[in-house]
Figure 1: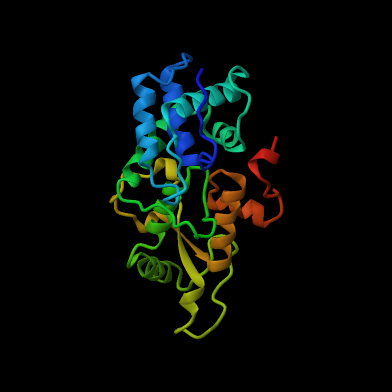
Figure 2: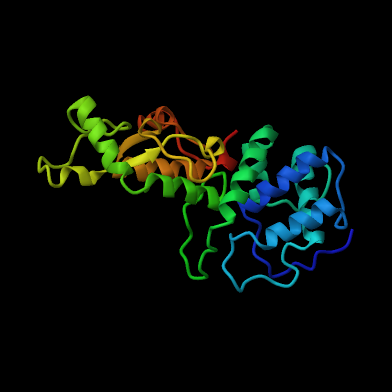
Length: 253
């Protein structure tokens, strides 16, 4: 197989690897080469995916040869055959989704939908929070949580049903008795896993939201980023209770 001549290009992201994994599953064990129309189409798609800062791509960025190599990398992770120079992202994406082709298909469709309007990160941006499903779908999750008017609606619903505000994870109430300040410590968390999310524009419902204190919300997002897997509120309560350590996915057996 021809060399990729990809030296100097940015590493593959989760978004890109999920799209490659979709093609790997579609290939059903036969590894398409760089001239295969499916590989050529994926190469073009990856070259337009808004997941890298502008100006850091070489002319060889995600060329068909590189895409064909990536399929071989995924084959090695899956079967032990193929190119052995696999990345941590290859292994982590396979660990998360290698046994669920249907989930990969849904994620790939959502990534394509989001990529139509998403902007690439700036070259000087700090490393962003990223869940197992990749940067673009993590942005979808965070955008839905911050949808205008959603948090006040959740706060009103909780006050009406419970009479007061408490964190769904740790159970703590407001940090102050001042009614003008007490709301500020609570945030809305979307409880629907990204792989189950509907298409962009689907209305978010209060019933799909958890009310978390700001600390628990940040900790939950961090735990999902570190573990590279979705955590329900009940999963996160176990972590808070100290019954399960939060370790990176590559450290878990």
